[in-house]
Length: 101
Image 1 (cartoon, rainbow, N blue to C red):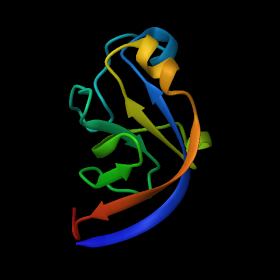
Image 2: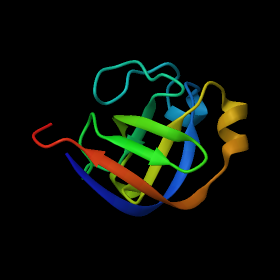
Image 3: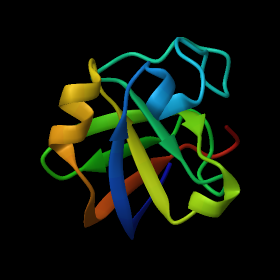
Image 4: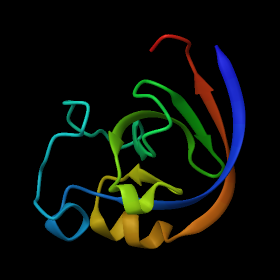
């Protein structure tokens, strides 16, 4: 297991069409996003890796962002209101990446 720190922009998203382009989509890994579990991360961070986001806790990389947002992490929230309330922050996150996953 490899741990490292990254300073990234962290935002939030939900199931709605405003956040996703289309409502109620599967994640890039094929799983349904789950509040309290799912995070979208840059392609350099493998699916299944765990991220610790300050103020949010540990989340699992199950989704991807568009390439133009590779410097960002997007935390899945239960509702659009909750995602909007979270806002956008620049924080240092811990990445826990298992080898070979």
